[in-house]
Image (cartoon, rainbow, N blue to C red; front, side):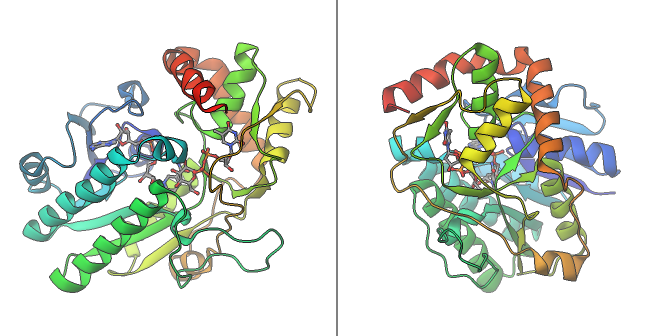
Length: 332
Ligand code: NAD
Ligand code: DAU
């Protein structure tokens, strides 16, 4: 049994991780979260108080981070500004949280010798061409495209430097696009589901040829636990579940599952610098740590996710209007 400090645990993937830890381990969790527009305490509702403690605060607050780190066995660092479209609109919070915040946590981990796991993204590798037989591996050179992915790449490099120079016992994982419950309606899949539920048409950037490699958030969580248990210090592990789909296919699938005509969506202004394709080769994680995804059928996982948004309107409705107003300003 371990005491895990989970930063960003009121966000999408961090809250799914907290639920997963409670349901599948005997670890306890301290969530540290600033509750930005993307954080929601309701995502932790129902978790037992004796297993999950919530602390409201900023990962850039050195004193607070130091206090919390002194009682933790390991840190799992999810907190970030996470949305590409926001980073194109205003990059500043991305530099503060993703770079200065990660630096603050690393310094505390260095002082306390705390095991550190850094959650990162496949976007640090840039993008691939459509039809390219290659997928990203741990050896792919970094080539980020957006302010968001550039700050995540920078945070990965900080972690590597703190391992090598200061001996911080850290690992890194770079995961592909997650889907599942508790995802903010700004993101592609929940935006389209909640548009249909609101009687609005889904919005596809450009022609929708861009490919993302989808993985269920629970499979991300099980992979992170495997790395915490048996990952080698200083190593990077790519997390993916062979889930490549182009955006047009995903939007048409959502519409079909929700009983609408498959072409009832709008094409809108494309994202600046829009990465064409992400694809993960997860061989290292599978062969070295024996990890396997549980969600192998995207349509099944998507159907369950749609049902979750249908059943939990009180969770997403308070953020929907502001999100659509933001996109309307961008013409998206
Ligand atoms: P999210 O935006 O849903 O959640 C981020 C959480 O971090 C929120 O609860 C927010 O309140 C909190 N936070 C932000 N700034 C903070 C600060 N300064 N101090 C404390 N808390 C702060 O993001 P997500 O989609 O759950 O992503 C979580 C992590 O996973 C990020 O590091 C992201 O880069 C990474 N990741 C995401 C995906 C994906 O598909 N969403 C894929 C791979 C990796
Ligand atoms: O690959 C991992 C990354 O996945 C994470 O690092 C990021 O935190 C996470 O946000 C996600 O980034 P993307 O930019 O790929 O996700 P997003 O949900 O914003 O968009 C997915 C695809 O859908 C992308 O090609 C843009 C497109 N899109 C998005 C929105 C919001 C649309 O076509 N229409 C939309 O309305």
